[in-house]
Amino acid sequence: MYKPITDDEAPHCLECGELIWGRADKKFCNSDCRNAWHSHLRSLARMQRSDTINVLNRNYSILSNLLRLKKTSCPVGSLKAMGFKPDLVTHKGEKVGRHIEYRCFDIAYSLTCGKLFNLHRV
Ligand SMILES: [Zn+2]
Image (cartoon, rainbow, N blue to C red; front, side, top):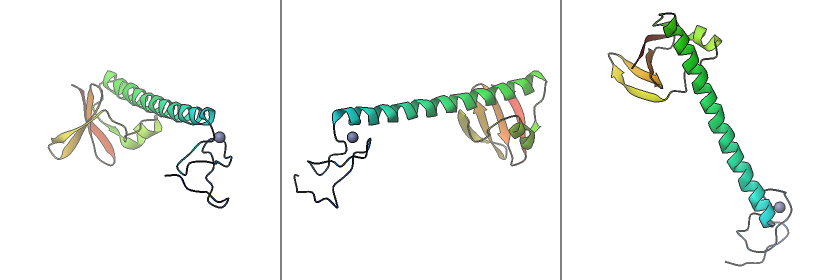
């Protein structure tokens, strides 16, 4: 497992970029850099989850407002203009008729490329 490392192939610390000396599979120059790197990764994952939840909350709010207005369909372009992101759903169901039913929590709908329709609570 141990082998001499030349200057050309010496790895650099993933966190600070300093040259690393020692084991060939070493990725960090010290434990502080290793901890900082993993802390950064956890932080990024947390931010990504938070962004996803925010998008789902916005989608849910838009769909809820449509239902409150007794609307069961809407052009996708209008939804996108309101901030709706059709690629994020909480459930992708089976085909209902010719279309797949999607859900955002307890609100279900079907989509074509141009229209959201059959909007209802489940
Ligand atoms: Zn380092």
